[in-house]
Image 1 (tube, rainbow, N blue to C red):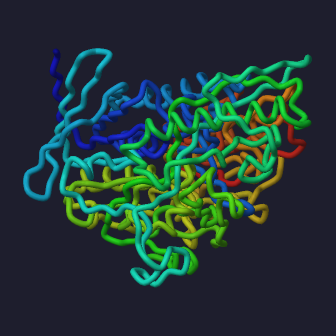
Image 2: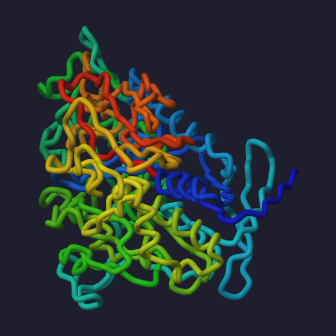
Length: 560
């Protein structure tokens, strides 16, 4: 056996989208990070192993931006064939691109050492390399979903459904229990140009009649989320038991659709079925604040709001597939967006433990809105940035300058409800051809610039170190990061037509002579910062081509 040791600023345990965004954000803000992931791929529920699409806040202009939007746009650019292994490759590339980030894949966290109320180190086992990895760090971020460090330390956590009376909520049961939302094994189908027969394995369940299914949702263009079990079992230790049951159900449902009645799938074939269940709920940490149903319904107004949610309170019945009395979930209304505070990501009793994802400090009712992956991603970017600030400023993470954190996140293209980004002094002191480009508001039709050329003019030649651009990536597009099934012709999943693909940035001197320029020919991102070293009196942005839109659309053009 081999033993490797690391001494770092932040150890992130769990490489789902929350963990990946945590690690990338911290690394980009200048601290050393080790990311320990127990699977061979990143992405968690979004990975090729599970294949759940990335959902987030409902409503106009509420799509999550920042690192999660960067990843999705990169996938549309690289993965035009919509292959899940290539989606995983995009996630891997984003992690490997960060020089401050050490990636440990196939490494299961199996032990933690504590000194009082601080975690000193964690140990992981990398089975394919027969290597133990011990990571000593200033901070530990548990983004594992199941809160693995709760089981290895004395960190306070919650499990199951609280009683109505505990937090004065209406959604939970009258009496607290250990029931949760369940887990699902998804399957994907592909359309062909000919009839395809299907023979189920002998051990699959048999559903010959429509009434054998919990409700009628056998359309080909859904992801079969309602094939769900485990909420009445132990959603951690019974995972394999759940998988076995889910596989029998999945094959039985597809057998029903193919062989019993007319479901419009004669030409469709079963392409993939997941052997790793996607989880909705298990342990949730107890944080400096516990977010409740009442907080959700009030819009999540906190002084330390650093992220947001906006999915409905989608509370699945614990019986899942076997809940046959009604629809298998209740979509309790929730405002969109509603804010999430920094304090719900900081452990109540372990000084250097933070967390992001579905394991944050929320009640069961609030979790039903905050658990979706785009929300988990912006939580990750927020806590990763917060830890980087804490390390660099040598203060405890709960004592960082919250306003500074909020403005840093806004500058990194992370929307925070009810807050506006402070525009750079250079942009405010210069004359801009259209003030909408420097109003600090970077979403919504009222804040988009449409034109052929934009410029800043200074009173005198001025040092410019960066150009900050926010393009229109169509935050209201109706498709997710990846499809759940594959029709014969698929045209939806692509780079948004509204993105400006080609543009120039020109710098002019006091006499109007061209000093320097940038010519970008294949942009595919919403948020772009160009580092420059110019001393110019005039800076011009000149769009040349889009991805198909007839207008040149831009939210922000800023000099720094």
